[in-house]
Length: 349
Ligand code: NAD
Ligand code: DAU
Image 1 (cartoon, rainbow, N blue to C red):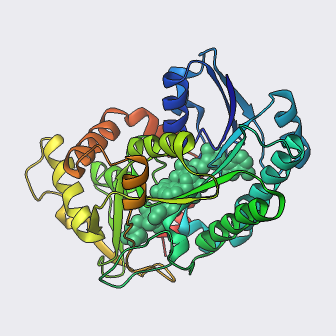
Image 2 (cartoon, rainbow, N blue to C red):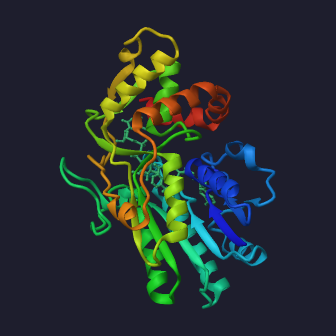
Image 3 (cartoon, protein in one colour):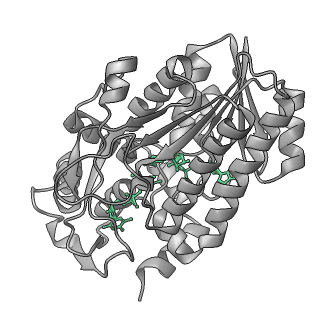
């Protein structure tokens, strides 16, 4: 029996991870702590919400007192920490909320773990889920490895880098058993449609402009979200304490090429003539401080722990587009209300 606190479990990656853990490990108690920001949605977990080994707790990770109570009440022995403000564009508009959640929130969890475990670290683990963006930006060649020096550029990546440093500081200073993984861009179902892939699928369906930042030449390394959840499972169980593992898809795409694949796939699945939606491509002002290229070398994870991506990109993107087309109601629910105001602010001059 383990009592695992997953933070941010109602979000995109968190919900896939919670589902995997609840279904795969009936002997583990999965406690999902999430404050349900605009990005957190309990509909993402409808299929497992009544499972006996699952508990949801609405709680802000910055609420030190409540976080401490949860650690004690549920005798938490492991943490998998995903809760975060995660969207780069929002961090450019409002850096403070990123420092609060990503830095102070991580610190509050670290402190609760340290105090509750009180020096007894047997079978304890604090697993921090981070991003490849902490490494900065690559030119056309090369990959991020676990040894790449940190060089964050956006308020989001600076806040994640800071949280990584706090996690390592708690290991070095107090002996807290920690592990960190840094992953590349995820795609798949249940992603809030402010990020490139779900936003563009939704816009193509609705014949809305596709706002391509700058020249569309920026490169991202895309990984299917369930493969990220599987990697977290592998690292959680077999990762070496104190280590960092990079997770990536060896699957680089220029934004503009990826956008063309999405247009083709949506048009085909909707029975539209090929090329119908090409006219929606609209080049707009570039994102401030836009990193040119991310590419992860995940060979450490492959060689030491045997993890590899399971899905080819062609299959993954087809599945993803089909999911959004079949789940229009989910999209409508998350894109109503506050989201409309956000969209106006970000994309209307
Ligand atoms: P997301 O924005 O979809 O979900 C974040 C979740 O955290 C939401 O459910 C939200 O309600 C919750 N949350 C936010 N602030 C909180 C707070 N103060 N207290 C409690 N809960 C709070 O994010 P995601 O894309 O699923 O990312 C999850 C984690 O993985 C993040 O730490 C992110 O940095 C990291 N990551 C994401 C990607 C990606 O491509 N999406 C890639 C690498 C790493
Ligand atoms: O690399 C991992 C990171 O990937 C995660 O840590 C972040 O949480 C996650 O949001 C993601 O960050 P990106 O900034 O790479 O993702 P986003 O989907 O916002 O953008 C992907 C690329 O598409 C990026 O080069 C910017 C571009 N873009 C994005 C949007 C929303 C556009 O051209 N137009 C858009 O409207």
